[in-house]
Image (cartoon, rainbow, N blue to C red):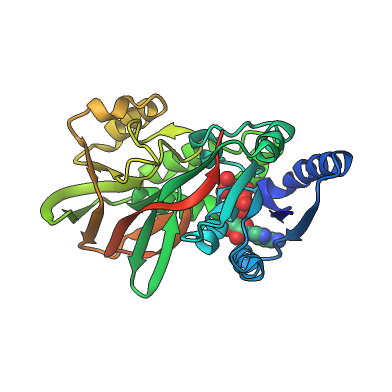
Length: 305
Ligand SMILES: Nc1ncnc2c1ncn2[C@@H]1O[C@H](COP(=O)(O)OP(=O)(O)OP(=O)(O)O)[C@@H](O)[C@H]1O
């Protein structure tokens, strides 16, 4: 039995078409399945939690049809349950998860990969604690400018317009350019596995589990979801114009060569900011700094490409 959790509203409603294709294919192939549609933000975590409870330890596959936000919620329900495998059919605007896990863009091909079931791998996730909130991420988390971009993107009317033109992933770049001229950098302290460092004028700190971020940018080109490590990128002391230039190079991972961009790896990381800067997990704003992040090795089973 396959359990589908579908966000028909992903990509501003265009995910409906993706689901229709999948539904037709499941019926044609006589695949046994149950489908649940998300009705509000946070619903996917509730759905996955109740599916997992009913499975009572049996091995099952939960397939997410939607964007990285819906996937993020299901990850938070399924993490540390080794009897659950997660499949994904990309139906969102950014789809960084499918890039990082080599899942085909085409819905039928992505479904074929799941039905073959040949590649379940146990991957790392990151656990974040900020204030009273605890959350897991599969792609990345960030503190500062990138979280502010996520906040703006998730409330942007532009996203809907670009999605209609199939240019949804461009919204991150456009919002970045807009915020570039108003965002104020701040000083931060970072503790990586017990070693503390201070950074002045930080634009953002991103902690990545996999390579891709913000709709296809190669933020951590060396990241691996099976190495038991998280990859940090600190961007500081950059003028607004140079940040824009560095940003362009992120698309091919060239930013790591700039002296204002520092990279580290670690298992347990704390970030303290002088001001209460925003924190995102997989593109969803979850709170403000300070934040504690820890790698959870082999904590999620995923059907990757
Ligand atoms: N029925 C619904 N109505 C409104 N919002 C919903 C509904 N179902 C889920 N959501 C919320 O919509 C948000 C965005 O969904 P999702 O990430 O799947 O699509 P997206 O934003 O188009 O794609 P991406 O995250 O890849 O850019 C999620 O935070 C999710 O909780």
